[in-house]
Image (cartoon, rainbow, N blue to C red):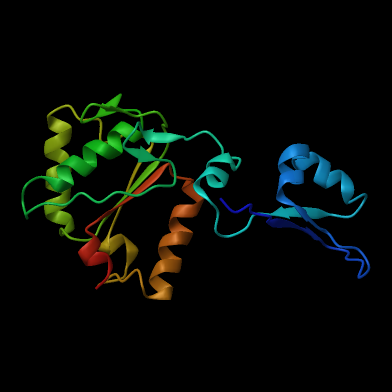
Length: 196
């Protein structure tokens, strides 16, 4: 088996043209990241991870513990698509997901909600009259849709019909509307209508 001698690079913002700031990867692993920072003195430097790694090197990279919205189904910062034939209940399932993430229920389809926070539900498919009737029916059945953490928008409140997430003005409107709420999740119903 051939020995591999790879070098890693330490990026320093104030370079000296006479100093080689690269060093053997084995030295970095042996002495650790803090030692590399110490070599930089009072200059700001950053350890640069090579873009392609062996599996062993990849698994040795530092990482934060995984945070879940729904454990182990939906990680924080992740995404999911509810897919199915028309009129099978995808929107109802998405509402129940939203309510679980607001803390109105402890789980969704048996997956525990581990992060609770505001949820924005953007309904682009169903006209407001029909959508409001569905929400009222859910409320009458005891679903806590009037949670202070459950926010709703539709194609009329957004004032953009058809809404197109690829349109920079539409995307900016949605982002500016959502940002102050700092939601744990944003649900867009339906993906097909978001890209008209």
